[in-house]
Length: 148
Image (cartoon, rainbow, N blue to C red):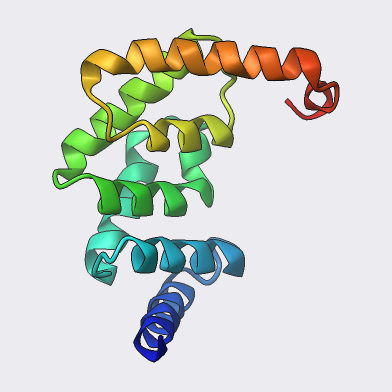
């Protein structure tokens, strides 16, 4: 347990010292936890390159220009052996979710990240099914209409 806490603290400290003005401390804690939970070695140089690439590859108004890119970069780094292909797949999934009826929000990027490990042939079907479930929840839970 001490090793886990030490690793968490080291990752968090590296992130905070490098990106201190770019995101909230809670984002850095989440990213550190993602690496710890997935038993993935954290490499600051690789991670920094990835966050910069994400920021440079998206449009001006994309949520990936904001602090959303830090968790998305961690998701890609943890999930995808080839980061370029992983990013392309993430964007394909994201656009599939939009086509299925989801809005362009940070939560849609998170949803796309959860679908990264699925086969390409299943993505459209899963996106449609996810939106059907979301609509059903929205119909039965009035408070979702206020927030979504």
